[in-house]
Length: 108
Image 1 (spheres, rainbow, N blue to C red):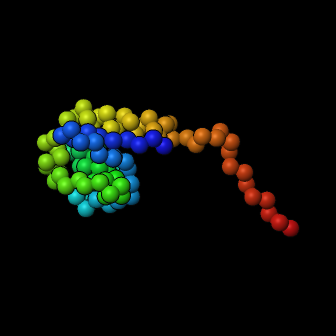
Image 2 (image 1 turned 90 degrees about the vertical axis):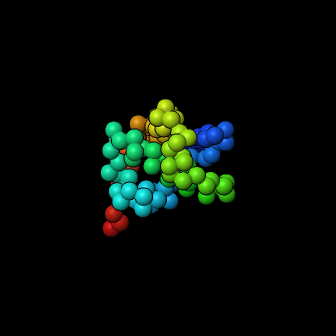
Image 3 (image 1 turned 180 degrees about the vertical axis):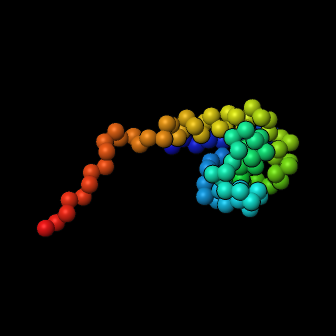
């Protein structure tokens, strides 16, 4: 999986979906990521911030922008590019192999 980054104020930060990002989103919004409204820029921006914050922490990169400072520095186009990059990375949701899993045989 290739690394995705986002440039904010001239600095590139790692940006990937992690369990930490999902927990941060829940803390910030009270909603699970499965409840993100696809038409809500607020949800998208908040989750994007959570992904940058989490990936930066995991990679040991300083990221101290508040959610509002982050939102002031990111355009809707930046958020859309990130969403598209994640879609491309995740593909169509199928596994690489087209084989169906084999059932284990029962031993007699």
